[in-house]
Image (cartoon, rainbow, N blue to C red; front, side, top):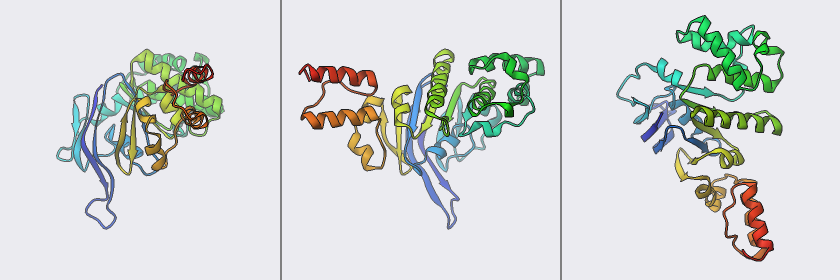
Length: 287
């Protein structure tokens, strides 16, 4: 499902003393089946743009088109229920949204709310519980008897049961230890590849953006500052640092190496494999 932002602007509490411009002049396109990361410091507009993706917020001016549906200020959004079925959002700490007495009932709640029969919803639950790395025997357990990481997987299964065409991840690894973070991010990447789901990652982690995304959108003070591939974006190290953003550790280490040896490495470094090759080249005196 393609997503297009056309001069999107959003103001909170417009025409009041508390009016605040949160987004402006957002022009971008996200292709169906792609994996896009949206990064930016706190207050840059990440959460605001996220809430436009399924109609939780409406543009003050401009528009956003999701598939065949366009939302703009002049129209009352139609059929938002169907839009929200197609765009699944995994919010921070999704396990806080669990509430049913069994995992099966929790996963079935969303599909049944959209008219799916109980029988079909249970079949979906059996399918998605395995997709998130848990066995079918978990379905009859209480979600509140699970570990934090398992609860998060169950909450993700509830979103997947809706069979979304777009999956929006809002800081999905918040609060997890490093191993849990990697497991969850690898899970999302596998789902992205296997299901061909358009994936939008909203994150503070430069490492995750560099490792998983095809394209990165950098927001600063409510508008797009840089957009491009991870290589293109993280080549703009000075710009990112100037606005208070970090860069992946691999990129920082590459810069330090270049400063230390007074050279410029010939190969780009976005991940550890790239860095190892660059260091080998440097050691051989071929940089």
